[in-house]
Length: 471
Ligand code: ASP
Ligand code: MG
Image 1 (spheres, rainbow, N blue to C red):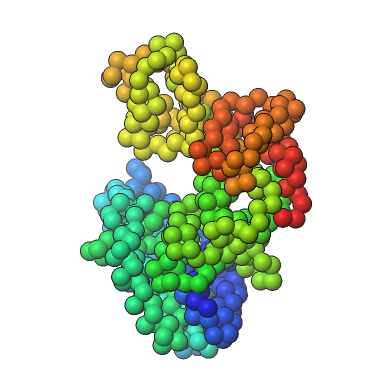
Image 2 (image 1 turned 180 degrees about the vertical axis):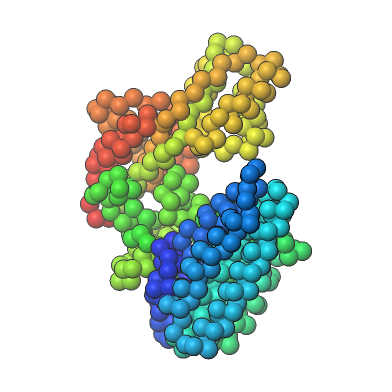
């Protein structure tokens, strides 16, 4: 079997977990599978890198102290991981050397940024690329020390070419398809195991870009599609995609099979297991994706395929996105006005605010936008400024503390009465719904409620659709 196996989160937390990953890869290799490995940065490292870079450009930064302190901590973490994960002396020495060189380059980059005093999106991508550039050689060394031949490559070296939309770069698919396949085939034909840095890629000129936070999953599916994998495995620390967040609903179950489209909806609506963009390449090439728990190798996890053979329930999962705010634009002046949604979306889009959900009443007396709470003040400022400039007198209101709840499942399509069941359940629980939206795909019904009601809603709907039963 041709497998792309991606590791992220707690499975790349320390040397021990990396060794555990290496053993899994090695056992598949021993069984005769061709394996391409993709890895995330060690747990928390991308955040730490971005954090230090931002601090270094703040007024009053003290790079002479901050940089050495940071380097000490990040060096210790990666050197320790090498010592634990790599069991052969010669491979250990070589890997330590690579890691040391990469750390030196990182240090120079940080010094550069602190001199410049600014962090452009391009330099941000450079800095955040170091997480994967440090973790990939360690995992590769660990696999090598078990007895296979392994080499590590950056996304760009593998053929992952993107545009120059730094921090959220878009893959150039036809180029990638041409480059990746022969490169990976050559490596696996020589019985070697490539370990590719997730998340990072490069422009055609070779300048480092990243695919957006959490983008290693995306790397795995882009490579899987381009190489022609039989399956893509996402190895993480949860049991799979769940019927609800188990922290909110303890009786939540692992969903055994789910369609690409359902999985995309779930990723989008805040089930943080997969990167929302990762499904598309796999779906287009019809490659099954498995979500598996690194620490429970015998569990079957969740299998994502085009059409699960039997659609049991109607609703598969209830998700909740916290930390959302709601902006409502309204007022009598708006009734019958043209292009309200377009104008508001345009303003928010230009201010780079991501809109999570839109709902509009048919009278057009108001229209509501759910946005990430971190962006609410920016959104309000942008709207007020633009309304003033354009002489628009629509009223702007805001609810800061709301949650978006979504009921997701392909079985809703064409099944009458699902919305009625959702809303009567909420009504019975005496919970007030703020806004409602249903996409025409009919794969989800989503709505907003006050944040304090969100947990109760998730639990009530989970019970209503009997999601606590094994699926
Ligand atoms: N290391 C990157 C991040 O933390 C990519 C990933 O982990 O998927 O966003
Ligand atoms: Mg992730």
